Image 1 (tube, rainbow, N blue to C red):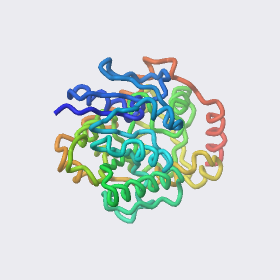
Image 2: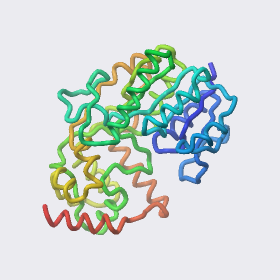
Image 3: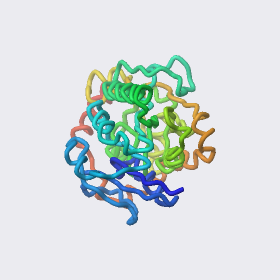
Image 4: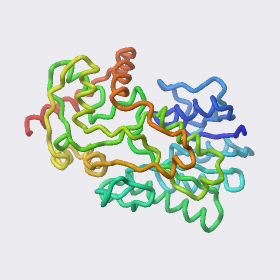
Length: 326
């Protein structure tokens, strides 16, 4: 059955593949975003509305009088935005899908693999605590006022243009220049990386499913390389054997506070996931793009898009300083 789906967002690293797959499966897809040009395009069949989730009046105007089978919220990071959605779409949506984050799971995890029953508790990262607060609000709306909620928790989801390392393209440029690259910890921590094309299969498979209402699902693949492997595979794809220098996540966080929350609150921990709950409902969900292949695809994408090869000079200098401390 074709669904009428509204994506709030829709041109990001995670959402673009889901929009594309929803269209391929015959759904009627509308995307609402700020209308800014990005490197990620959506199919011609997509209806495009202009609005900014930070400007509720613009969203109200864009969707005035509309009803949807599914509203998928990719751009909500605080309870104000989520409460606005609840008020706006109550009685006008069959399923509201909130994209939370696997970073909301307990850090450090008391046990792995992490499942949907793992506690939500992250004392290190405000982003994660805000996502937990959004979930709490939606669970209350579901239980007490029958608002039709499904929560999904992706972990580190990437596409061909979103590199997973601390420095992004700056790291690749350092490798190709023969400079060492900084890796947090000792580099042996396994880290789950999911290509957005694989995420999309799990995500779109949940849409319009009454069994998914009132439930939360972890959507991650099974590719979990160590950070040493991530950097090494990227270097080899870039044509070099990278020199890796290690420094503790805590020291990096102390020296560069902007990097700290994402490291200490997420990437420093071994994060492996059990997606049995999702696969019971969406059995076709699996990993088709392990990161060994993902790394090759990413370097090929950047080599084909020289305009994206931007080096952050300040961060590059910071890496030199931190490597001198190691």
